[in-house]
Picture 1 (cartoon, rainbow, N blue to C red):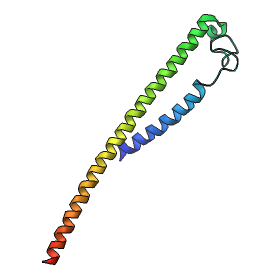
Picture 2 (picture 1 turned 30 degrees about the vertical axis):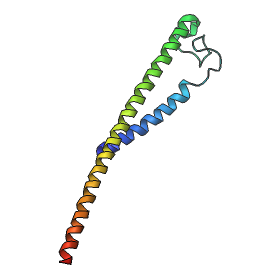
Picture 3 (picture 1 turned 180 degrees about the horizontal axis):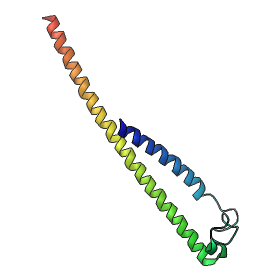
Picture 4 (picture 1 turned 120 degrees about the vertical axis):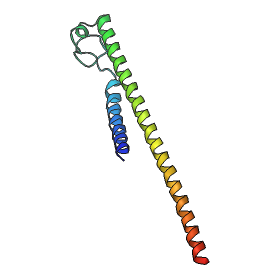
Length: 116
């Protein structure tokens, strides 16, 4: 049961984080291209981005790449957690089916003993 709760809470936290990231990382730039100077593309991002030009654009591209990788890692972790949860439920289903068969056999035995 602890595994199931841990996996479910991980899945919920991951989905909330991914939702927040996708809203912020992929929103359109109000003032122009990312890294094109101070006040544009979401405001000041440091001295290199303030200067604009190719260095600012490169830094913005690296930042986007970092967040894309982070999001991919989170998606992979969420996918793995969901796979674990599926395996857990399949195991539970197997155990329940075995229990049902045991109970059916027991009912048959009781019925045979009672009818004799």
